[in-house]
Length: 223
Image (cartoon, rainbow, N blue to C red):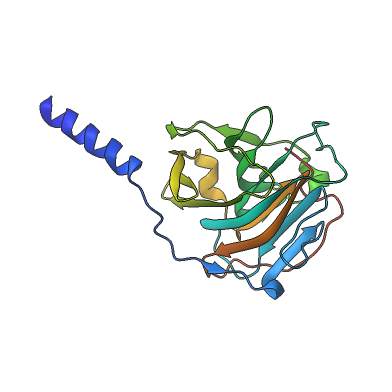
């Protein structure tokens, strides 16, 4: 029994002290495929922006940014909700199959992780806002408020079946992903809804899961 307690304490400590392990590289502008909205000179102003890094591996990503407040115009999600958020896309096979790590502002700052899984479906018109599984954290910390003018770093890594998320270098979320995440493969990327960002930099691991850069008018208007 004593040995089991020591092992449990060691496991908890390892999670609490977990540090990023994957080597990331800043995405050059020509390798960032913006599928909705626009990103110009490291700035996002439009209410809906979606992008992924060509030639990237989707098990890790980091977003560095300065928060600029709400977008001038607001746009509802496909579910009809009006939400302010920004985050990372991991293993982003397409609009219907992806792991989301989102920093939400409403009703309070929090991290929400979800896996969108729709086998055999690829486009927003095919899956809409279906196929979501919200992932429960085994460990999470308080998320700082996003004040206009503040700069932050959001980073996420998948290790085996576990996901780790850091904010400004501190572990903010850790938990096991559902089995569906194992079937996903694709590049890393970002998404924003109804917020403005500047000094934006996306960093990803090099890989072969780049895909082609094609814009889709209704891509990722979902949750």
